[in-house]
Image (cartoon, rainbow over all chains, first blue to last red; front, top):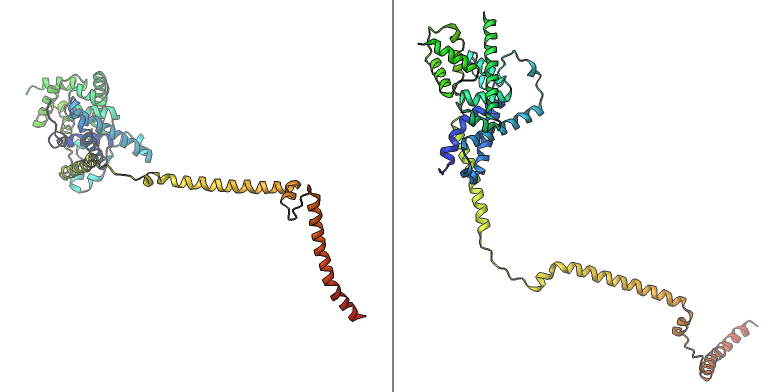
Length: 175
Length: 180
């Protein structure tokens, strides 16, 4: 069994974990906290690293669970009135819209796509994040989310269909 | 460029039937940024552009994380050192060993003393009620079984009384004489 080191195997996963946490919590600061907690948790279980099939999947699973916890706690703290407004493309987090240049970039259609993804249900969002952005095989996604591969495929199919529909709607607005 | 193939891939992509390699081809195709691609294909360009992983954590994160982890490690090491330290046997004298019991012993002693005191006072109460016992302990020790001694006792007492009268009478008569 390959020796796993924190510095070379776990730490480089930070951006991947961060993107997953960001996709779930939709807040940069929260996502960063989640990544930090995830790494500490992983570190504290280092005596079990050797038993793991994939340290990456293990980290992703912990990260997702922590992010979901955070989301639940945030939901308890305040209920958003904007939840029903599906048609708007309000950025979920304005903290990185601080300078005008970034704001201009945000107005780009790429950002619209990101926000389209952000509006998907959490499971679809996570599946799409892992598949389309991180390029993970179905099997790994299934193990991270603790669901079957078939369910992963269904989630991804629904997510892509929704995105496609939204794209067509957008095009109609623009015409 | 064979747009037909890309179109096909795109259809299959939205149906969730593409493999990872095929998705990679789609991303690579859109990353090239072909200007003259048909509108059908062009409209999905932002979708695939959004798929490049770009959000990243700040560079200070690594350092912070390592510090946190190392901090935990030194803490744990300190704990294990503490645990592995050889334990020296201490000699404990008998008084030291029994010290916790001293309080209990004192309480028991106090209780016993109190109990005895209460018991004794109750017994005394009984003697006041018991007339025979009182008579036995009484100030005048009269042995009623010996008539001769009883007589002597009584006559002694009476002699004392007589003497008393004898002493008091002259002063009395003197006083009364003074008046008369």
